[in-house]
Length: 440
Image 1: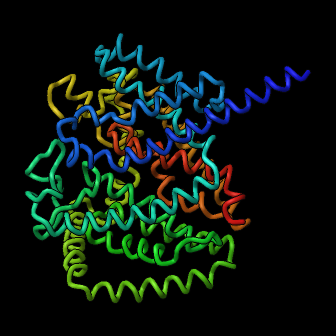
Image 2 (image 1 turned 135 degrees about the horizontal axis):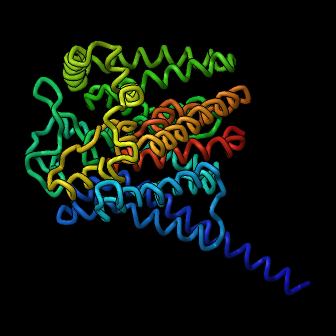
Image 3 (image 1 turned 90 degrees about the vertical axis):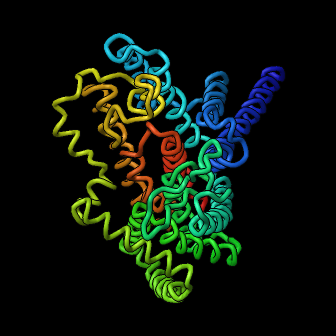
């Protein structure tokens, strides 16, 4: 009996060590997501291409550890994702584009990145959430400083270097002669996704009883506000609006928060009035409003913007999918890497929006299965998070202000977007399990 007890103790100790290592991989995945672009642009430009998949070894190693030591979470939805990856890989090889490397590039999402989501959900604790939230506060300050200098610097400046050290600049077309700054990322989509997630933690710290340095919190809040015009990003602006709507949902479910929220709104309005008087902010605001108006007209007004930007045109590909091959054109074909391997050019061979890409790659049967799974996870998480509001637990609800859209139709074909899908979805699922301890 003593030998057996000792064996059990050793096994538990080993599991704790493996769990710690998996958690380290989660942290590494996160930091590589945030700073991968900086490595590709400024520090290791000669390794720009291989660094595109720098997070893959991290996800593979974590999944390998979890499987080897039988720590992998059991989930019907995960099993369906993996089985879909296996079947559609063979469909791509025999009925689709028939390129092994493209098929494997697409399959890596189902075999490693999606399982990594479930590892985050299983191993992330409330202390990890608090630590990550504080890191987001510091990163928000850093990111805002970087995009400020990128916004006001010429594209030839070092801070605006593109991937591989490209001296033509990494900024994307904005308005009034200013470019949308990518921050530490390779492209503006990373900056937008970063701030969309950061403001969830900033808002959470204002609403929760967890102690955090108030000067740091105020600084991060100002940074997130200033980033709205500096980013010249309508997506980030709409994410802010969505977050405010979700905060309103908290008031409906838990009216005790109403006085604190009203005070916060008044303070934010006053802060906004003051910031607009700052020349650097007002100049950025002019560029932002100019692009906002011009882009809205091009996309058919506010309705067109919402349908394209937040619904991703998904309704179009569900109900107008007559040209989609029944079994799909082949896994991986909808990515830029897949397009480069198949055509020799960095073009979109399939629709850029997520549901169109999924249906185009893996066909009607498996495409609809993946879409249904993602919709089920999104709405299921939304309902669970809403029920938690009455208990004074807000984090999962706030994360879903950006996470709901990301879960349902966040893009998998582009590496940075895929990374934010993994982190955001994993955090949402984890918060639904551990949030009881967050507001104690």
